[in-house]
Length: 587
Image (tube, rainbow, N blue to C red):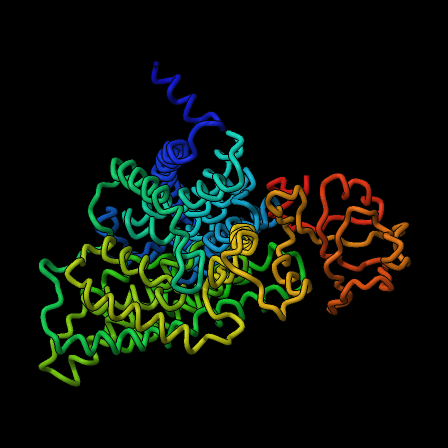
């Protein structure tokens, strides 16, 4: 059999799901591995035209990426920085709100929404618009990260590929996750951490989309390998050789760092989404909001230019101990404000890199403070900066395991794994406890708490429960009535009752329905519909013979496809968008 024939067999919808998805994950990995250097090239071009071209300002970069380690200020000083940021904000806003409003803000939340609510569907224009708008935002000096755009772009390509090949909604969701992992792996040079991130970030508790992990790993590894051809395989940040955890007494200070960054992490979602609401209320065309945020950012940068861009060069300087304590703390707060002005206003960019910036500066500040107060302590600035980098984002985004792995790979600081484990878990626990009842408890509002809260798994869990009841392995309590089944139908997906040919359904009485207004004893909806409960304005009504259904009532009933067809002039089936998209009906 020829290679082309084998490939065609793998792509055929009827072929085995696992092998097919592994092959497609490899393809998505190649796309992600190419998307990262392409976006970096676009970003450099936009920066050359905007921040450098208009303001003459170049922030310090990373040696691992060929960047300069010194700050370059143009002949006009910093006075033209607000102009550069504003131009970037205007251009980005025009692109986003004209062609693809879903690309505003940080791309990771959009990818999470696509998984839970849209069957993994991403519009075909999203990758291009997201790339261009993010390059303009960050290239103009916007305080945003490059990881969110690349994650959304790569996830978009995974979704588009699934659409081209006629994949099922499940396969499309998995390929979107594989795309997210691929893009992040390439941009951060972190294959393991980003593969875990893609399956952990979907939930705000210690929950994982474990079934997707083999596909995210495959895509992440391939993307890392492809991207490495262009930029190499060294970690992004440089740490002192042999840096490791070597004294048990320093573990106490790492625990303090975890608790402090957890407390600080509660402020970031609140600040971000409060700023977002504020900009939404500003009158005028929506595309002007990112420009307004960019202008305010530029004014802030006149005093603190360190807040511009992703801030990787400044993070390296903080790790090297080249920034004083007071400036470290000031910049940590200013970066949160700058990120909110950039991304929450509608600008396009990620929130991961700015969060790493904040954590790095908090960790470095604590190490320097402890060193001054307790001279005999062994608090290495680079070590605390790395652990702070991981622990702050662990709390703010509630992704402790993935963040820990990503930071180890990004820095090469594997000797700091033990203190990182302690700090990220403490940060996660502190943030989760403090912000438990807050309006915005996490940086990714599209997260759901558990798999049971995701529409993706509603039918899966309901079918399992119904099967347990049907086979006698589990029974409803004697006090349970048919009305208790209402809670099982909130997802709006018909539930087949095995062996009966009927489904448990949720229907609504149509406007002008012939059966409305008649008592149930007259069987207004036909002889083959078994009515279990009626929902009317939040009240559950038992279906007695004298009960009368009215227009707008929701009915929980058992019916066959034929029975529904006969009653379709009176009843309409209620389904969620996800159920309707996947073609789930009583037929």
